Image (cartoon, rainbow, N blue to C red; front, side, top):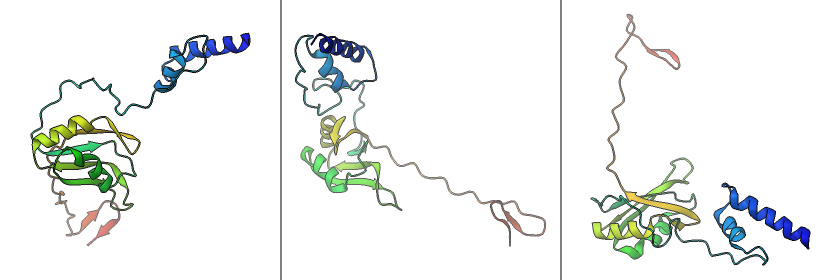
Length: 170
């Protein structure tokens, strides 16, 4: 019995002082009193921030379109729409997928009818769990136009152009 009590005290001291341990595990071990058995593990939080915490310095929305990052590879358009539908009239919910594999790239976009609905969705869904992953909701930025491909205007004196990856082509 004494050996078990000293082992659990040593384990508690190691876990409570080290930083890499899981927070749920640390909360379970460190909050239990020295003489009692294992304590009740609290349910996992619905947000990575405490419920009453408010993220400071959040800029106001200027567009009803939101960028959603941190999506699971298993999240579909339908799941994204189902998660964001309670906050207003959802016009679009799109998970960006890879053209070749068809799998999610881990981010997507949702668009609401009004900026107020989008703001409510951003406040309610930011740092929440969706399909087991923490998602982050930010204002969508306008798409930057891609620069046009540069034409190689250099050519050899004989009228042939060189392809640097293959060789001569005419």
